[in-house]
Image (spheres, chains in turn yellow, red):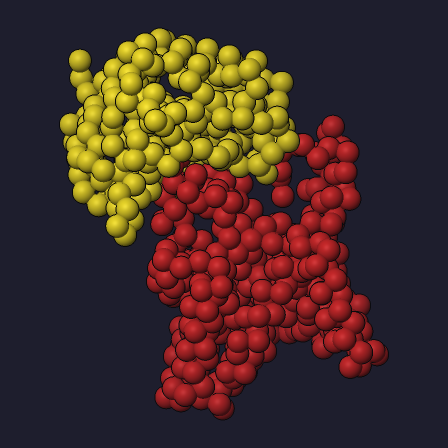
Length: 247
Length: 319
């Protein structure tokens, strides 16, 4: 199997505190990797270091074998890496359609070409497909700020997929989503993985969701990997139980 | 539906015709005030792009108008045709605006405001102290109004019409930008730069472009201002002018296309209409601005937007 993402000895220190401490792992093509861990275990910091939103203190990140450590988030996106954030990050004043166009437009031609090109950046067909795929058709013309929380989560995910990324990092996609919408979200992610071989890394607190979605789980505690393996194995690991429940 | 779609272009066309006819009922002074409104609106449109659409605070727009005005006055005195000076003034301010955008990559909000304020002060000092270039406190006089393709714009009415044409052209240019993918990227930069970057928006380039285009439009406004008043000195380009332009954008409605038109009308035309109130005008103006910004921070266009679309709050924004 080919490693899409390679993280080697990645560390991030804030003063004397190691938020991420020598983390090493790989993500393979077509895989859905889950990252779990108690609050403050360094999951989001790890994401931010991989995605160029924070500079790692040490270590290396490779995408398709090429080093991308410290690369700007916009450049990483152009290299085929999409992401969602822990908090909702849609543009509330724009309609669902406009949010999706924005999410894909920077991948269409040159900056000057976009200025002289069509207002929809030639993305209408892709946007319609994405709206249909994420079942957002009834709300496509509404302002994103007026959607329910669950619909905004779907839109947030749809935006991460607009540019057809090879790798998507999802930060707590299930957070605050009701069970019905959560089922829909999980089903859409599985479909993307099955139909398009999309590769995912998912940070999640919802154990049921992450265990049913992911093929492999990596557990972080105090910035270090304490367990790694298939969901059933991780669920029974004494170190994981201790990290979550204490002694 | 068709009538609704034609309403806005129809209203814009009616507005342009009304403005074109307005000087026929006015004396020279009134026409020159209208010309000043057109030029100030152009400067405010540039600032609206930088601040209103892209969310980058700038207290330097007045300085760019000054740079454009001085560049035009100096170049025309050396025999450069007005068309070329107009273009060069815009390009010069575009280049300086691009450079001024670099601090915005490191600092934001009030820190950025102070950086641009320092630039405005520096530009004013150059206008006032570099007498060999700018004429210092004595300024530059005898700036001629141009003859454009055989059209002599020396009469007050003709120059106003020329400024109006330029206002229409600049407005069309900015309308085109804000309706293009660039406009959407500017909005993303203003609303959430971190998310924008994660979607591939090069926030560095768009920040610099927002400053540069806004400054370039300021330079064009300056190039029109110099022949409008035919004499320039440093005083009109002091920091207070930049603050006034900022007020126009905010009172009119930052991020609304027609905000600068309304804001400039209030700042330039209203004082003339309320001359009879003398000093009381400023008191009323200041009180009205405070009330407006406390209760309706989206400005006058924000109020109109809410009044005109009360039943459909979820509809996608097109401002």
